[in-house]
Image (cartoon, rainbow, N blue to C red; front, top):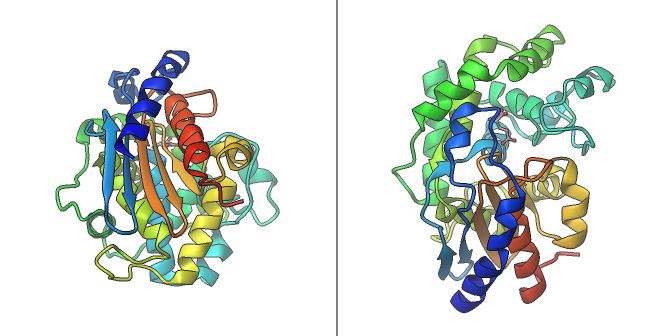
Length: 304
Ligand code: GLU
């Protein structure tokens, strides 16, 4: 397995020069566009890795999987999906028009920015600090990594430049989709996106999802049913407006982030974390997608 991963990383390096690191959050532009790494955690607990698996980067939109799980734990699926839809989108992850055209004025799904801001608003906690601490602790528990924290440079950078997210949030507040203090909700959202992780951490989250909501130590984190819903939404919406193509060519529930990470869960087999900060036009890691494509073919991982 180690050999397979090393060969795939070597093969995919050339792709990194065809993408660009995200720059709309200025701090993200500092990432190394050539980095490429992978970590695999299988359900027997064996772990394999190759390339730059140990670089730290921010979780960005992969946090949307975590905040969705926590919102479901706090409110139940029925209530959560009165506030956010389950439909894929052909618009970008920060689309504003989508919010206006949908009949109930709900965000289309929890994997785009508007949807995640809505799920963050549903997370229990008296204060913003309490909410982000619950998100951090939940992430630490699933990854088994107590050291996960926030990259404050990225957080400040997002907070300063996140006016599109602000627009989405205030629009949703105006339509009664979110309640409470909008700036506080955004603060929790920006911090959740700025959690600093490695491929190993996201592979572990993927492994829990692959294992129907149960950690390697047999502790259940979410119900089997909630896990099924989360994975289904990852298949239909997790790779932004490239989710359909990703399902056809790779066929694994996955969620990407503009920090260059992709979290993947191969049901009953393994969790995979990849990183490659150079992104394609849709905001997905260009090298990361190639890695997953090769691995999926090599190990026959497509669920379809
Ligand atoms: N924090 C980023 C934003 O709100 C997340 C985007 C992403 O990873 O897709 O724009």
